[in-house]
Image (cartoon, rainbow, N blue to C red; front, side, top):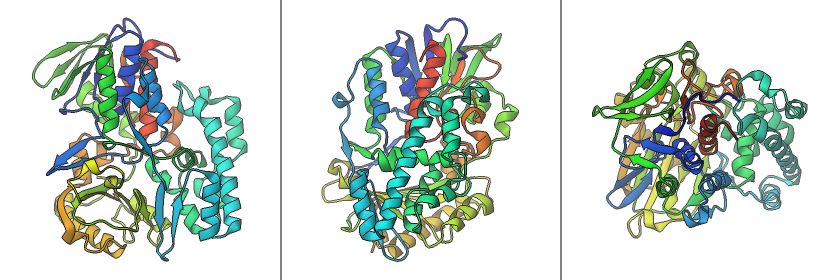
Length: 492
């Protein structure tokens, strides 16, 4: 494994996102002096917090899986996660609604899920589901150590016995046909392949190895932190601070001072110079290259980006009895949705959408008797010819109309507080192409072909976050922080 050269005693991390916090804890646990620079007043990065009129909204990811990775970060400084976070296991993990009026609850317990599928669809499909779980469990076993939780310096580093095992079980075939090998009903096919969207590709385009995301949530479980998703970065930052990490909030990095291929300091917008022996950059990788390092390598210019999304955070006086914490509303179209988003780069004509209701499991997030809704509609990224300054307000009205058609009666009239985020807003927050899911996980942007976490041409600059290895999603960025720390510490 290649490592940072030279002294590494004093480490500066730009960005207190989940990846930066994961790295900070590991470095502090190994005795390094760590300073974290964060432009916002609070930690979290994309896992942000919006407080408005008594409502507390998560602005970023809402699905939490693989809590063992959070536990591992706490353990690196001798802390226990249970002393810092209260995680609620969700039941069901998701509630899926289909255009024919049927619905399917998703459970992590395989026997319970078999019974649900047998009841809603039929016993043969339940057997197919059981075989699919066996498949994704093998995927996870073969992938996690060799391909995900590991710094990869060369494609040759993939030549392990587990590569042969992945090939043998069809891990490098396309995801959609592989899923249909086990699951014959379109309803189960959708609910166990939509996770490809997290990787920025369609199920038709994605490799079957990305079914591992289905393992991470639909088999391993989905959790909700009391206090909202933002409780996770708050807890990680508090534990890091307890163990000596210095946080400089409301401080924006402007540029990197460099000398003979080494970063020597971070210069802030206020002109403060913060010296470093090693530097971890947690902002979106292409933005970090351009705005902080002052370069844009060809390998970064050529990247293709995942679709974006519009989110609407709503504080409402109305509740609904038919929904769960996470609700997926599938339209009639499926292949067409991804074709529109990725190839045609137009808005969905028959949307598939996510509605999360945090207040179902934590009433402290809203005023008494109120509910909060996190509504996500996938959209093209800013490569599309869409003027969001004009389209945004119109699309907001279309989102409300779609929700009301999907069973959320009087949704619009019940809104007390709302906040809309479009791809233009994501870009303003520092996400290339307005794409919160970063560069797409196409074959040549995956594994060893994804942007490396060591900055080419520099001895001591390391990247962390969704733009580098291993990729997108809360579990992946937590791992990326560990991998970044390992580049500095020189050990796993």
